Image (cartoon, rainbow, N blue to C red; front, side, top):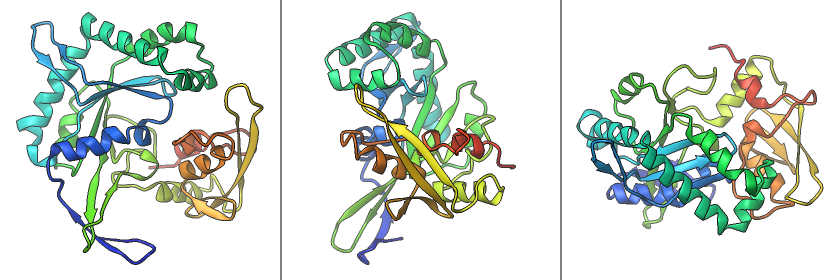
Length: 302
């Protein structure tokens, strides 16, 4: 149950169907993948044997230089009955030359008609002339399996560990109050609830919130409450503005309010660029000696 600041009680309920959870995820994909990610329209790809499949989405993330196939699921469909076979077919199809070429063509067409996204890429130092090469570099890597799901089946992690691909799982939930108002929730800071394989310390704690992750950094003595963090940001063609945040036990304080690392970062960025909707605070905030807080998180003992 969720109690909002205005004292409305929301109880968790099931999604009406898979289409509902898929709509929530795809409409808000930047909350998971960030503003430097491109969501391709649904497109059919085929295995070498000619079996066709249509992923719920394909995302190319230019900031983290990785790409993902999105398979939005309901846990009730079952790991072995539906989820594993579906994803296995999609992974097989993504390695074909035709699928790779189709992804490149779709990306180039979308970026070519989106001057705002071109400007975003230039913030990363990626010029228009370099995009084709950057796409090929990213697509040479194995795709990540991005799996937003309403619950975590007991055997899902067991299956994921058998893959040579990284599987990231985000738990998406639906809540409703007595008056029929609906809330949807995703993990704070878009941190996955589960990541398969050997991952950095502190990043694979199932159900872990960004607040408790930051608390683990404090508990390890890698940050102290009251420490000041910094970053600089500026849109294309503008000077970079310095920002400062103060470490608190449950987040980062900016303008006398405490937020998760990512929300704190976007509150600052929006002062100079209101069009930005997301930021990864863990790869934005730096200590005075220039170390990102994600680097501190990786040092937390298991």
